[in-house]
Length: 337
Image (cartoon, rainbow, N blue to C red; front, side):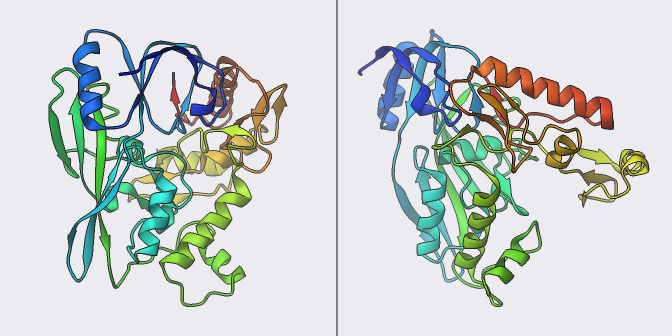
């Protein structure tokens, strides 16, 4: 194995933070990963995938395992569905496009989400009314201490809103190496009722959409709101949309009668965090090399050479201000390192 020392992680994280890795190794196979874990199990390790859902606030005083496992394969196929396995290092959006080219439906609403396959179950990624758990079949993961491989089913993962068992009780214990999804081959169930998908389809002149049309609409919407990390450092949505009780929402409506919201259940309401942050006055605010994006208040950005700790301080200021104004807590979606 080729372990490098004092490696800059600037090109390996979408925020473009110039943090250093004390040690770094490129992992290109499961066997390679197991071999490294056998020798490094007693030492500190840090697992790096696509680097799209984290904010580095300091150098990594550990061995960084950069997962670059690649490959996509069809595992099972019937008239109605296909089970596809993708290795953890595959880019998520490129995988979505591969599925669309093969007429496999179920993840078209998740187009253009940054990051790699391996992180998708950890975060239970979601957008525009669809979550990974809706199509998730299983994943393979290696236990860090024992190097044994285990299969996790949908139920095993205990998925929640941007949550999974890998962020809770099993945090830091397993490394996901591949993911299997169960996708439709025909009679695709289209989800166009969330967000601006319907209006974007109208703009495109599409009245009878297919899964590629849905993907195109989602891509257009995301590109109109979210900055390209290659141009401005960012990690997409920095905060989760808070879910509050109906009573809490009624209190919010007293001061803000037109507050946007989505009914989750008989007792729960989801309020867009972007609206809370924008109403609090942060949208478009810049603080030197960092700030809040001018088109989407959910997105914190690194304009040039910002420090991760400064962006984190801004995130905490936003949280404190939103709580003071609305009595609503917003949590970070991005992992703070």
